[in-house]
Image 1 (tube, rainbow, N blue to C red):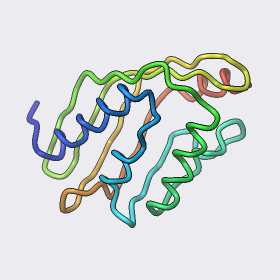
Image 2 (cartoon, rainbow, N blue to C red):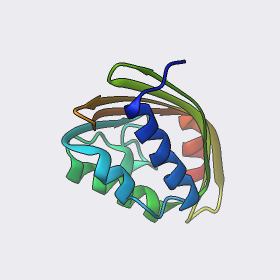
Image 3 (spheres, one colour):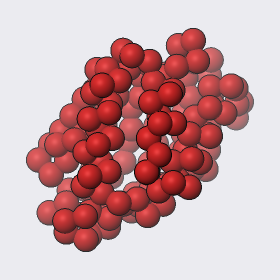
Amino acid sequence: MPINDNARKLEQAFVTWHVTKGRSTDIWLDLMAEDVRFHSLAGGAPGAEFTVECRSRADFVRYLEGLTKDWEMIHYQTSIFAADGDRVVMLGSTAWRNRRTRKVVDTPKADLVTFRDGRIVDFTEFYDTAKLFAAAA
């Protein structure tokens, strides 16, 4: 699959995210446009309230704070990056431990990311929400 500068930026962000086990959020904030739209499949449902849709970089900061407050990363592995102009798809897997229940969610992961002028303007993440909710309960 073709790869471009946007895909390389995204790949590097995920490498840093994995290596720091989610403790380094600056890599994401540096990539996000002020008006970024971030959509998580759980959509803010009970047990995953932090996943409510984001419409700005400030909203995305709230998402990251909720994620890292409630969950501890075990791994974040990527396997495929495919680019079509300003759109990049990432396929991989991730595992997180809920800090309260100590249960683990290990799920395939897919992200569809749109860039504008080198910044992320739209980010939609797909994962197994049933596993997420089971680990949070």
